[in-house]
Length: 515
Image (cartoon, rainbow, N blue to C red; front, side, top):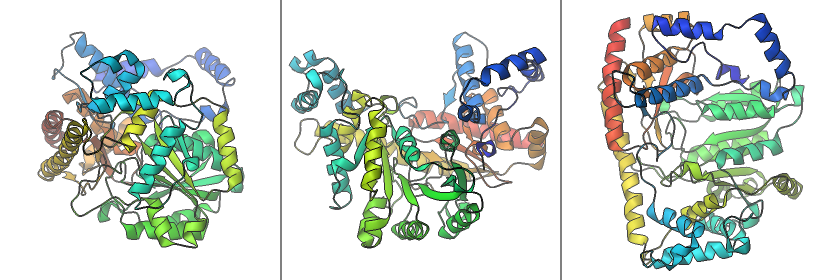
C-alpha cells in the first residue's frame, strides 16, 4: 500500500462557491508546454521524493492560512476570527508556556540575566549548569551529535524513575530535533531491500498522515493494521497478525509502530495489551517502535500510562533480552507543548552493538539538534522539585494545563453526544478527539461527484462557512465507508467553546441541507 491511500492532490483548495470552484479548476489546467516543462524539471529531482504526495489536509491548511490573511485585510466573512484546531500545537491554541522553561532558556541565551535579582535562584543554577556543558559556555556552540551528555544522562535517569527502577543508559539515548526526526532516524536504520525483501512497517490506522509520508520517502512498504473503533479504538493482536501475515506475500515485515496514548484516537493501551504486542513482536521478529510522546496526558480515571520498556523488562527473559525496542518522547506534546523548540529523544533497547555503532555514524554525518530544544528536554525530564524556589509556580502551571485538557475532553464528549450524527469513543489520553460522522447519503454522493472524501468536504465547508479548521479523518486513514474528524483539545477553554458552538451550528445546517 502506498500513501496514495492516505494522501493525494485534490482539485481546489476548499472553495465552495461555483465561482471559486471555476477559478480553482482553471488554475489547475496547464498547457501541454507547461506539462512538458514540469516533467523535465522533475526528472532532475530524486525519484523517491517525487513519490511523496501532499496530503489533502495540507490543501485545507493552506486555505485556512489564506482565510486568516483575508480577515486581516478586511475581507468580509461570516466570522471575525479563524480558529485552527487541526494540529496539536498547544501554544497556538492559547495555552501559555511554562515560566521555568522560558526563564532558563532566556538566561542561557542572554547570560546577563543571571545577574537579574528577579530570576529565581534555581533558574540561575540550572542555566549555569547547562551553559557549562556547552563549548565556550555558549548555547550557540555545536554539541555532540547525539546530544549534550548531561542532558542524555538526565533523560536516562528520568526513564529509570518512570519505569520503577528499570535501568537506562545514556549511551542508548539519542537526542534529535523532535520525535518525527527520531522516527526517521530509526526507520533509516531498518528500511532496506526491494521486492519481497523490501522492509515492511506495520502501523495503526488511523494515524497521522506524515508518518505514512515518511515511510514512502524511505521506500518502506506500508503494512496497515486497523484499530477497533467499537472497542474504544483498541489495538487487537489478531488484527496485527492478519496484517503482518498478509503482507509477507509482497514484503518482509521488520518493524511494528505503535502510538500510546494514541494519536488521533486517544486510546491508552493496558499492560495486558502491551504484553500481547511484545509477545507478538518476538514471535514475528519485529522491532517495536513505541511512540510515547503523549505519556504525560492520560486523563481518564483509573487508567495509568505504562511504557513498553517497563512491560518488556517486567516480562523477563527471553523477551527482555531479545525484543528490540525504540521508544520516543518529545517536548512538543504533553504539558510542555514546545512544538517550535524541536527536541525529542529515542531510547534504543536490545539492538545489536554493530547496529548501535552504525546509528552513531549516521548521526555523525549531520549536526546536533538545537541547543535551546535540548534545554527544554532537560527541564521536561528533570523539572523543579519540592523545596526549589520555582516548584510552586511550576506545579501550578502544569496542573492548570492538565486540568484544562481534562475539562476539554469531558466537554467535547458531552457536547458531541447531544448532536445528532456524531458518535465519539472515550478519550483516555493524548491531545485529540476523533469523533465519527454519520453523514446523509446525499452528502456522501455529493463528495463522490466532487472527487473528494465526504469528511473532507465536510471540513472544507466548515472552514469556509464557520472559520473552523479541523482535520478530516480520510487524511489519517479509516475503514472504508466511515467518516471522522480530528480536533485538538489542548487549547484554551474559550477557544474550544468557540469551536464547539460553530461546529454544532454548521453540523445541523449541513445535515438539513443533505437530508
